[in-house]
Amino acid sequence: MNTGFVKNRYIWARVKIAFSVLLKGKVSVKKILNAAHCWFAQKFRFVKAAQFPFMINFELWNECNAKCTFCRTAEGDIYDQNPANNGKSPVAKGKMSLDMYKEIIEQSKDHILIAVLYVNGEPLMYTDLDKAIKFASDRGVATLISTNGELLTEKNIEKLLESGLDFIKIAISGFSQEIFTIQHRGCHIEKIKENLQNLARLRDKRNNKILVMLDYIYYEYNAHEFKPAVEFGQKLGFMVSRRPGNLYKLSEEYPELAQNEKPQEQPTSLPVKELCDWPWKVMTVNWDGNIFPCCDYVVWYKQTPNATFVTGESNIKEIWNGPTVLDNRTVHLTKGRVGYDICSKCTRTGTAFKF
Image 1 (cartoon, rainbow, N blue to C red):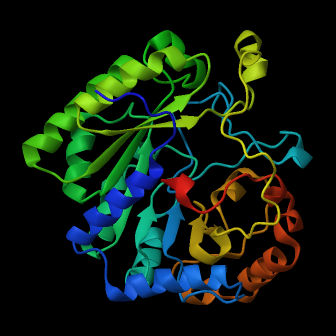
Image 2: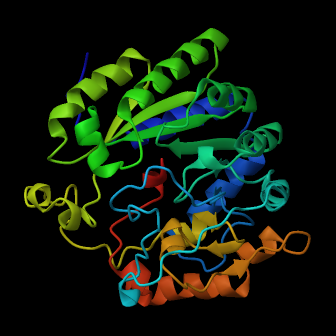
């Protein structure tokens, strides 16, 4: 088995997703033209983008059972990532109504290529997840989720396979409970392994074409468990990826481990002058209907949204090129990422990291 790669394989994942949804008939000329318009508008620095984003992220529920060290307290409060607030105000929690989600999909179904049904929460905790996926699938919209795998029971696997889910990513941070629980406080790696074996078995039994990725969150302290995780995933017919771990709060809970860690795959300089792709290509909808330029906004307390979607009243097309969104793009065009505190230290380029 090949275990020599060390970087994430999200580019390969994107290619496989593209071919998969194409074969399933979830790609149309109209969607391709809309995506091309998004790319063209950002590339040539137009303030106005395509009629719709090519991807919409939905925070269906921002609750999570994993309680990862970099994301939440041991009690489950979500850390506020805005340094100006000094973490004093935990991020509010809530669920998106299924009606709101359906209306947004209905309005955008002919133009978006994919709906990503998670941002900060564990999607399998949302009881109507399979209904949400099926609603999009029935309307020709591809879907993607990322999960910690703890709740990936046989019952939930059957629901996901029946719903038409196109891509699922399972994030782990070790292959033994001792190492795994350093980050994933609330999960159990042996249970997750069993769930993944059931996923592979039921996928093969149904001859289902779902794409599965085992996403290894890599630290120095768990490097020795990377190889067995790769072998396990490849044996099950999964794509296996490695991505750098998040060091936030690690030094407070595990100072002896943190001193051996170092930032991974960081650019030599921040891309502050590189035009961000997200305002032109992607929309993020928080559980309360607040619409933001990217995923990071949902964990920066009290950020002003581009708009708030109201079921039965709002129009996604009007919001996407509305005055607030145009103002946001104008700031990016004239000031770059330093125009917003939340963007000034962002290291991401493109939108590929979401995959």
